[in-house]
Image (cartoon, rainbow, N blue to C red):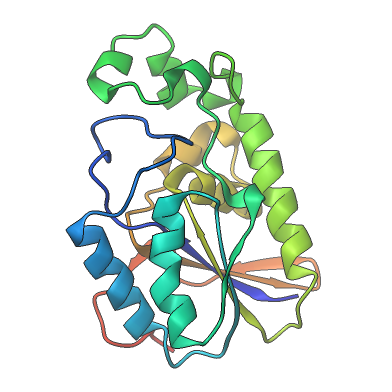
Length: 204
């Protein structure tokens, strides 16, 4: 099975302000575009076999410079899509902070299903199953890029590390960061988690 390079999309104008979720039309801002370009440069010498991204624009735009550097298409992988926040989608964070469920989302996310949306359990199962299925299509030495969303990557890390779901919020995944996941013969190994690409090349 392959090694996955899990990358969170770059900066956009909704980060920290509203819960964009699956809303269309959320694009990288200028900082995000610079981050995407740096990712493309930093990863250009790696033997990447495929580049996948969630269906949303901000992940597609982050993936594009990486794919271009390797003359590959950006392939849409629907299991990488952001959590379905239901009625919370598009709402401002400062308003959601006042919601009676907000503390549960932060402290006991295993107990939460977003109103008319997805539960964290459902999202984690979707993500873990999707990534496991994806890597089975490749060889052990293959490197596969998957550009996704912060919570999606955090849920994946928690799953493959065997952490309780209620602890996944403790994992930090910054915009344009890289998390390296190796799966070998049903064993899981991590390289860097939440690595920020401040250097011209990926560390060996």
